[in-house]
Every structure is written in structure tokens, then in C-alpha cells.
Amino acid sequence: MPTAIRNATPPSVSARWLPTPTATTRDRLPVWPAPCSTRRPATYLFAALRAEDGEIGVAHDGARMQPVFALLDCALRESIVDYLSSGGRKIDAWYAERRLALADLSDSPDMFLNINTPEDRDTLEKRLAGKMRC
Image (cartoon, helix red, strand yellow):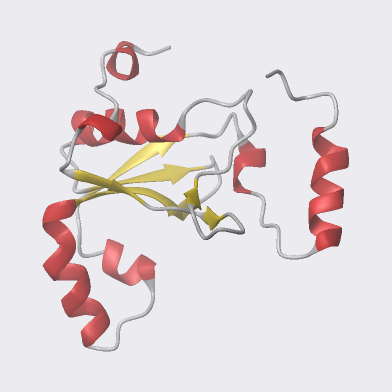
């Protein structure tokens, strides 16, 4: 584990940073899905923010940015409200106006799979069978 990540303060103890929930449970509670054998994404996002003096830490899967896996500076609240109020809807366009810090999560590609149907879920469960180390 890189020193910057090992020394990073977890974002959960800081009121300055807001993680983006990428899914919700049936009770509408936000969750950050990741196989338990993968790294903690928020720790890597926070380390990237510190190392690159960013406003938004965004996951990168090695091929592309994963914009919904992010850690945002709460000071950006007014900026995103203004962006949305003006009709903006593309997160990538708003991100382009900010200082991004990309977190390399290329060794955990399964974290970014999109599951929209029961069939997608079944396919992923089969793919991950035997990979889980909880």
C-alpha cells in the first residue's frame, strides 16, 4: 500500500468531504458497493485528494474515469446547486470546471460493473463466485 494511502485520514471522520453513494438498499440507505476483497475506495479517493490538492476525488478504472465514484469537497455545494439550477446535467461537464484528483482503482474493475436487471446481477454473481474473501 502506498504511503500516501496508508497515512490518509478516513473521510468518515471529516465533515469536509462527501462521498457519492452509488446505489441504495431497499430501505433507500446509501451504500458503496464493492466486493469485500477490494480496497476501500474512499480511502484511495481521499489520498488522491491530499496528494493532488483536488476538490473532487474521482475513481479511475485504468481505462476511464468513473464519475459516480467520487469524494466531493462540501465547499462545492453552491457550485453544484448553481450548475443544476442553470440546467446542467452532465457530471463530467461540471467536473471539468473543478480540480480533479484521480484515484487509480484499476486493479478492482469489478467494482464498476453496472447492474440494472436481475440477469445482470446473476451474471455478476457467477463471475464473482470464488473471488469473495470475507
